[in-house]
Length: 577
Image (cartoon, rainbow, N blue to C red; front, side):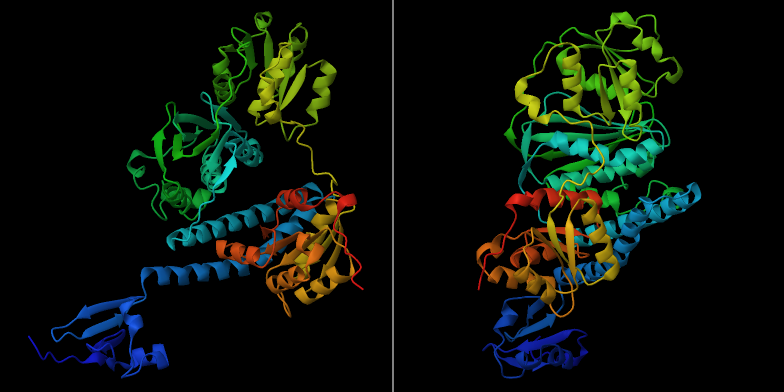
């Protein structure tokens, strides 16, 4: 078998032959073109033995044949960068479309115009959802998922997801609710963002595929640190022969649903990969009575255990006046730990049997006066889109009201007050403010520098900031931003990532290099890029936070709340003369 003749040009990949002494003895034209001066006859090739992308095989005479085949990681990285570039290019105009549509929605429109505008916004949000799915999948495929480890309240996470999904659910006439089956840790350590992404994906699907009834987000502690979160719906269900493949890429429970509901078929595949990355798993089962239950089980480190509530609800009779089985199920589950006697209000004859009545605003609308003829505390349950009912119920004499989807802390507090009692005072910090008012100008006088080269996006960001009460100055590139902060005091800088002349990264580095108080000026990256690598670049350049386009008004307000100091304590530039 010795003296095998090898025609190196027959190899379709970059190929070299390395002699026993470690020097290159032969190479083909592909290798010469690809590696240039690093790959010449007579040169040592120590990089070959490092095996970075090389497939190495030793032949009988001790020489080594190396063929370069880009490994899966390199291919995946290239694919991810392609998706990242496409994401950036699509997000930039999409930000303008959705943002300006949102501003237009704040103006006076006739019903037909508002209907057309809603179609534009729905289409834009659908496109954004597809874009996010594709980008998330690309990141997961490349193995670039990075998990954070932060302290968070898992119950609060579920409640915020329910509130995000409630407008669409209520628009379809669905009820959406959160319930805790037993004690839940107050604080755990893990990746709140990824958990939120998993549950939001499942909840959005549940709302999408449920024509009537409702959706429940149920959380339970099943073992030390392991949380089980179920998303239950009364929807169309999943055929039994599809349950095993439902988490596969591009899978759909029914191809006809693709036409009716849309989607990439990537959402559940992403959920599966994320759950596995968090050392957990996701599964599906049929719901008794119709519908579907998706559940995830994920381990977390318990930072603060559950708290023991007062048992003074024990034996109290609580009536729930609602037509929604979903709402009744959730409330009854939440109150089960208190050993309360919870029943539906079936008619008006037995109202006096209850100590407190929770009255759903959708229940017996024309006969609700009967409730107020009784000397019983009434807590009204009002959808957040029907806030005009609050004053009407106050005039009728309600004891209190709650906004749906119900926050569990508020539920306990209102019932406790109605019973002229209170729950463990240590839990008062989670009692929710159910006003959930529209955004107010809470940052009046905050001076903001906005560096954005796209005229439409600059107009949008400026308008949203001004709605929050900010005084905004716009510049078109990093060089102008640098000069602006030298001459004028600002409380906050929003810096676009990609700009001509000087980009946002370079501008941020130069601002930080000025030293002194410039090191404490909050700089927020404002970009259509959505990759983790982009976030790291921003932080390395001295930026403090990161917000992606399309801009979300609530996310922007949260950034202002987080980083904008009170005006009287804001950043001041000293005299450097």
